[in-house]
Image (tube, rainbow, N blue to C red; front, side, top):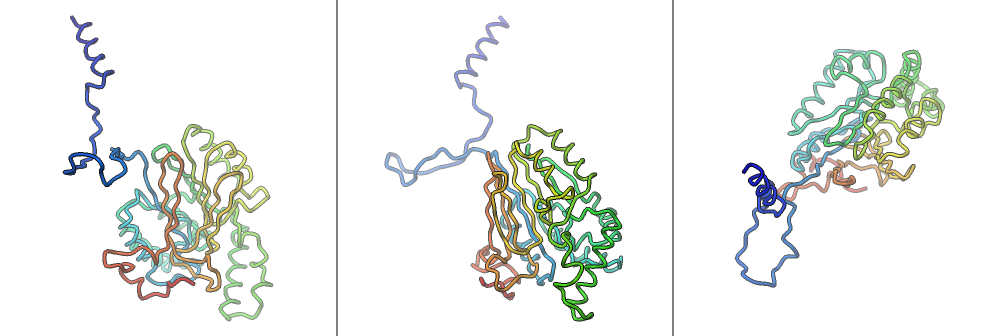
Length: 333
C-alpha cells in the first residue's frame, strides 16, 4: 500500500500535477483574444540575479554635497549593497582628532544608505601608520574578501607598504602638497613624491598576496570574481604588483575595478574587463571629458552587466537631480 502511494506521488510530481512553489507574477488584462499589444507574457517569476553598486573617489579635493546626493540617488536605485574603491576622506594627517572628525562626517552620510556599504581604503585613507592603525580600530582589516550568492569579492589594499617605505612616501607626499599649496618653494613635477611609482600605482606585500592566494585556492567553484582596489596595482610589474595574482586568476572569470585617477577608462587585459572609475565627488580635470561623477551598477546574472550612470542623469520624480546637486557645477564638460 505504501509503495502504491509513493508511486502515485512520484507520478504526479513528474507529470507536473504538483504545483511549483515559485509564485507566478500577477499579470492581468481584459483582452479576450489575439492580437495583444505586448510581445510575450513569460515574465521572470523570481529574479535569480542581484545588483550591487560601486562609488569612486570622493577626495583629492572633495566637492561638497556630491556624495550625499549620490547616497540619495543610490537609495532610489536600490542595489543590494554598495562597494567603494577608496579615498573616502581627505586624510593625510596624524592628527587623531581631525581623523575622527573626517570619518564621522563620511560615516554620517554613508549610514544614510538603505543597504550595506563596504569600505575600502585609498591613499587618502591610509597615508601613514597612524591612519593605518586608526582604520584597524574603526573598520578592521585593510584587505578582505566576502562571498555573496556564489560571487567572490576581493577587496585589496593598494597602500600595503612596509612601515619604513610608508613613512618615506608620506613625508615626500606632504612636501609635494606644500609645494602645490604654495607653502614651500619648488616644482611639483621635480619632487621626490612625483617620481615615486607608489604615487600612481601603489603596491601589495607578500602577506596580502598569500592571503588572496589562499582565498582563490579555497573558492574554486564561484561563478565570478570581482577584484577591487584603489590604485591600479596591476600596472606595477615588480613583486609588489598584481602579476602573481593575475596568473592565479588567468583561468577564472573576473572583473577588476579601481579608482585613483579621477578619469574613467576601460580596457581588456587578459581577456577580462579592467575598469578605472571616474569620481563620486572628487576633484576633476576640467579639460578631461572622462572626468565625471558617476555611480556604477552591476547586475550579476550569468555574467555581470555593468552600467555606469552619470549622476547628472539620475533624476527624481520632478525631473531634477535630487536634493542639492542641482546647485553644483556638474554640467557636462
